[in-house]
Image 1 (tube, rainbow, N blue to C red):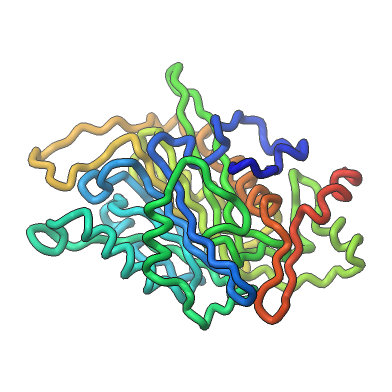
Image 2: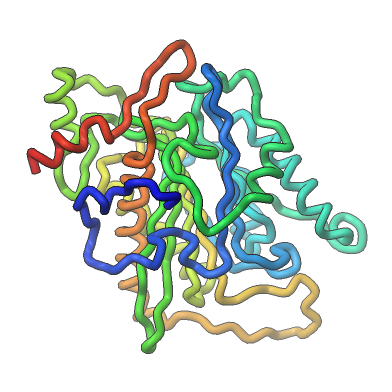
Length: 353
């Protein structure tokens, strides 16, 4: 994405299924992603917005589900999401202490486009996700402002930067620079192509545990650095899954659960202090907020066809994590701390494969 060199460009092909056109969550038609990056010395943070479709998300809600792998996190909006099985706003990702600001801004954004909210109809349920970027970012400074959320929302597009961008600006993955990563897989059903797309905000893992396509890359890096100590597996990861396959809330939750296998393939074991949350949605069926009929017709997946979708979600998640790392540059942040890019080690890793 954005002319960046991704993990496939190094000859590392994850899985057996084919990626979508962009190998991105935006291969799902209508999905767009926007960033605002705030990078200035001790400040390394930002905002990423995921917009489920090009229409009015409040009036045309998407079927959705969430899954908590490990609950050390401050995500907002998932209680109603789980109860009703829908998403009615864009999804905002940012740092842990900016969740409140993001919520306020997203409420304002939704109110500006829907005069009925809180007046002639109910309120709105914003979805906000977070990871802690405090090692590289002056998180106590509360540098994210409402205008930054608006910028990310208003500049969403099908092409977007990976790595140290948006909410990923200050994130660390496996002791190396992490952040935003994406990938997708095509699924053939009834002679028609569908897509399952994944985007991650990666901020987890211990360096020694890193696995790249089955290779113990963390151990290779440890040999290069002559230092095996890499800390505990703590941090967080947010996984956003989008698809155009018609699925129910329950089916989406089943697929969300499988993304944990993709994360595990990169080496993580979901430590005690790691907030690992998955949110998935399908654009195939939209629920009209002002539906007048008592019954509506939905197309849904025949359950015996779900295995290939599981595999697609696993493969795309694994690749998205690696893209989040390989696309990120070495970063100097708060207190002159330096976190190196996977790019610094990839040539030596490739030699030893």
